Image (cartoon, rainbow, N blue to C red):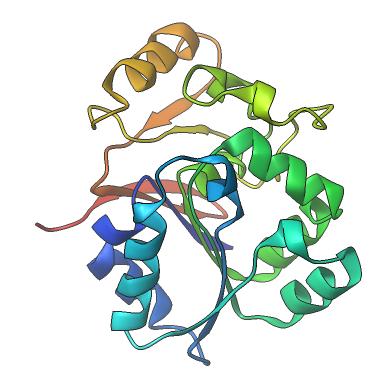
Length: 205
């Protein structure tokens, strides 16, 4: 297992390039679903353009718009999945509605190339409830539990010190740092998660 978790995909180009260089194909399934309930989604376009600039062919799939069988077929066959940022609770709700959590867990453990940006990083933890300070959980009215994919035994706090999340990221840190093992990162830092642990990498500016 080797996955990349980050705050801001477009801010991690060289780290992403190195990580994806081990892929056989040049195809990536890109899931922008977390942005469906966000007023600003420019970061999604920036992430898409960055991956395209590295020579990758993206198939953009909004999981809220397709049925479970179609999605499971797609996600079972791809070499790489990238899930971009937005509302973490809404993203988890949509993944659970299509019963994709178990499949993601299995694929990642088998060696899937996985890139998680912000919400896409947070869902890799065991439980996402700690993120309620940064994201409005009431948006996900059909979500009845907060259990995540559970391949990372720590909890990502993205956008530390970054506009417009300065206050909410710090408050999350202050509230939960004595309760659960948090890993705070700014927009130029990336968590490389492997079977034996994790490393925080910094994108060269």
